[in-house]
Amino acid sequence: MNLKSFAIVLGAISGVIGATETWAADATRVRGTVVGVAGSTLTVKDRDGKTDAIKLADGWKISGVAKGSAADIKQGDFLGIASISKADGGSGALEVVIFPAALKGTGEGDRDWDLQPNSRMTNGTVADVTEIQGRTVTLTYDNGQKKQIAIPQTTPIVTFAAATPADLAPGVAVFVNAQRGSDGKLLANRVVVGNHGIAPPM
Image (cartoon, rainbow, N blue to C red; front, side, top):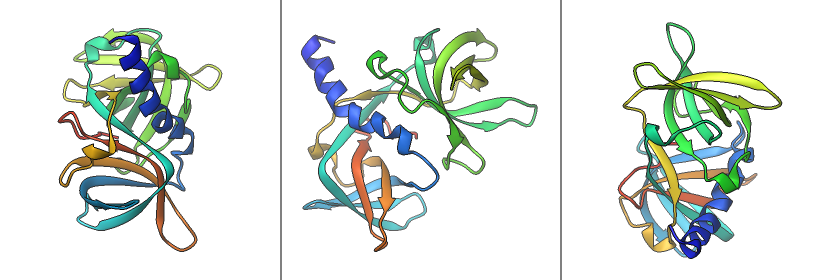
């Protein structure tokens, strides 16, 4: 990737990744497919079949996702991993996001997540990678805390890519981290769109 292309991608994703610190319990995360865009309102049909109208804030940003690989993960990388406790102990990854090096440290920590019941989101630096029926990584975060997470071979792994508002075509998968106002309406500063044939797995 040349410098200009990297700058475009970094500019597109900085607003998205900068939001990880607000990916807390009070956020309303909308996962679904685009119904349409009218003015500054994005309408999404969520995974439960409900339709949500989301107001896009002034200066909102958009990012795409591209396929990554477990082979890309190495010591020192910064990852965001949604995981769930395994019956035999430890945690198993539900999805993995590989952060660009320039955004290492964003949203660092471990928090509740709503991808599945009882899931967690952990953003941290890879301290160790082992090969045991797929990959297992040890993430460090928050002044030395550690969490070991197994990454099965079927786990979706993505990186971020450039996108434009034109990518919000009907039927395309999106992930929107929104806030619900006192009037009950949803407001979002950013959208992640599956514009490279991969649905955002977050």
